[in-house]
Length: 48
Image 1 (tube, rainbow, N blue to C red):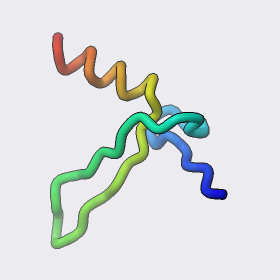
Image 2 (cartoon, rainbow, N blue to C red; image 1 turned 135 degrees about the vertical axis):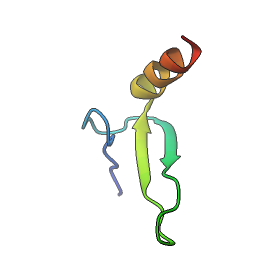
Image 3 (cartoon, rainbow, N blue to C red; image 1 turned 90 degrees about the horizontal axis):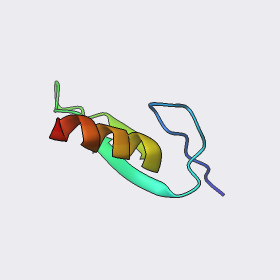
């Protein structure tokens, strides 16, 4: 079984929060796994 880790806090994802893609650079895109807690923090900061 695959056990992804949150790329922001380092905790194992118990439930999935989000996937974040970087802007393309030289035809490459980075993919980041985000836990629910980190996702909620990101949304809070965007709304401020």
